[in-house]
Length: 432
Image 1 (cartoon, one colour):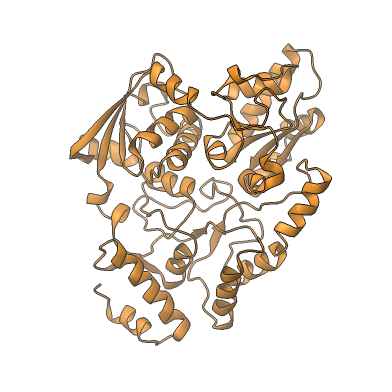
Image 2: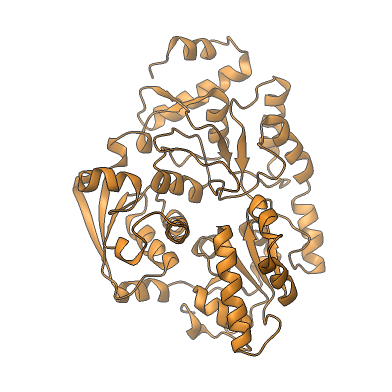
């Protein structure tokens, strides 16, 4: 690893032992992936993945305490993934007690994050790039982020550059102000290793398409052809929402950190097929392939035909336009089925600043009357315990399905299930 004079000084302890350990950790991290130099972090804000004050993370708390005691703060303000708890989200008595025990360090942890460099007390979201949140990097910015869905969006849709870092490594990069140069930070590392031919007869479901791509390419980089014909030719809100959800599924069902969409995403528009590596593999996705992928999702509810006890919509967090669209569709569906309230308790999740904006709208007031809870919670953290794991919970998120016992349904299926008296069976999605 070739270090600059300034970086070598940090290694040698010019700013104390704590900073020296951070630099040495980053160097070892880079060595693992063949990096020969550090590059400056040029994004103005970082993003951390550890948002949850779970009692078993004692080493993390000790480490952050050491950072604070040494006066080693982040060189850039940062956002962090969503909070795990919200008292407004439905939970049974035992669950509520369990949550208080499980996340007993939440208040203390958040206080430390604020001292370390958190943007503000509401900077808790997996979709930090949303306009209302404001952590939106520019094309070409070098980032030190974690959170798979945020990293793949920043790389793909915004054209920034960030590796799929782990928790704490991303914090160290934000503190030091530089990261090892390898992988998705390099031109060569951003070339497509797969050509994806979208050959569907209609617009593919974003979540299922992303899932199919992730399962096939794993950590590869897909160049997606013929998808742009189903989307707006520019990055409108509708297209951004589609790419957000598709990308999250590629990152969860695989390990995709970057994708290119022909004629649409920044590098695909400027570089075209020059982005495709010479030995790229090919994968054709038609309607039959999407059906095959969907039908192979496991249903791990104890009773596959149980009525859902809870529904989560929004993982990653919903954008403002998605909240409005969901409200309109839900209103139409309830009216059509002659219902005034939902059939299944439902939670729409979004970033706190988006929720603050949305609260002023008639749409928000309508959702409260029909029983929807709009929350800044992380659904995954809510379900990450044995009590929730046994419950029949459904979602429109392939990320949540992949990381929990939640069962996936498309948006249209979710609407039908929560707005009319219909109990799903194993035939409503996935195999038992």
